[in-house]
Length: 121
Image (cartoon, rainbow, N blue to C red; front, side, top):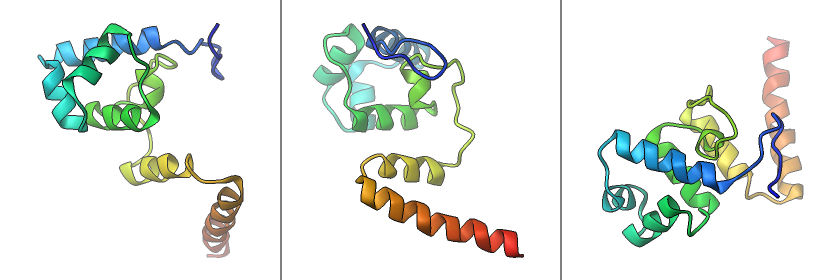
C-alpha cells in the first residue's frame, strides 16, 4: 500500500507512468527526445513509461522542469499542473530537500532574517 499525501491521495507510480506517457504523447515525443532533454537514456525513460522502474528524485525534478509541471502533478498527487513559485524558489526547495536537519535550521535562520527586515521597513 502506498503512502498518502496531505490531500489524501495515495502515492502510486502507476499515476506517474500514465501522466508521463500523456505529457510525452501530447508533444509527440519519443523516449529518446525526453531522454536527451533530461540527460538520461531512452531505456530509462522506457522503464518509466512502462512502470518497470520508479523515477529517482533527480529525474522527477528534471522531468517536471522540462514539462513545466510540479512534481506533485507528475506523481498524480494534485491536479494543479504549475507551481505558483518562481524557478528560483523551486530550485531552493529542491536543494533544501538534500540538506541535513542541522543545515535546514541554519537556512531557516538566515531566511527569517530577511522577513524580519521586511517587517521593519
